[in-house]
Length: 302
Ligand code: SF4
Image (cartoon, rainbow, N blue to C red; front, side):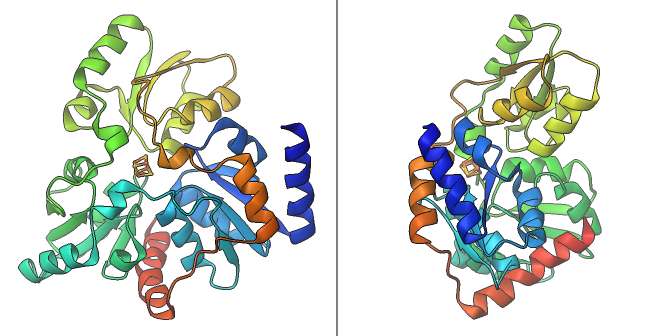
């Protein structure tokens, strides 16, 4: 493994490339990345870099977002099969039908959507800024997709009417975390604070001490004085938490909260992506232009 890491570092220098990794990536992938973060942090970091090539270790919609914001940089995704199942739940046709049914509504889409759907949105949001974004919209009715659990979380912060599109869209990794998992975790770790992601089901959100995005979780765990935490999100975040808050204890709320797509990038695939400079994220100029606008609106609002 060490030899492979040396080769990756050499290729990065030679090609003026950086590796960006989502918080849910494998530990060894996080360890060779220039930056590890959530969707919003990675999008911002992609805009700040002077690198010519961005190796994006995450899933399809994240790499697309980095490409949308960086039309003059090359964004390479180490495994083209890393496709988010939640993003697939909101194809363009479903959103168009909802827009026809609610012509006065504004559309706020979670960043976890396909570029073709983003192109139809008024604004994008992440789990870190969903509440802030829906409050900032002008319309009294918001079409919100694709995660109905995140819609529930956003609805609690506004009197506007939030309509989930599709009705039951969800992240399979978070949606399977059950209330029984939380009750068991409270029994097993009575001193621990329970932090859950807003992609979790309402019953789990309602019984947690905190609801936060992954970047919010890192901030809470490093800022507060508590020493033990039960973490209700994809288990990959625990690696970052253990590095950034050494000495504190972290327990997964569910050991089965593993996103298979997020684990697809490996060191071997990253080395191949750097060598071959592919597969590259390519979007049509029309989608690039249309989908960039709601992302830029989000960045301006948050
Ligand atoms: S954790 Fe959920 S939202 Fe994130 S990539 Fe996996 S399926 Fe998609």
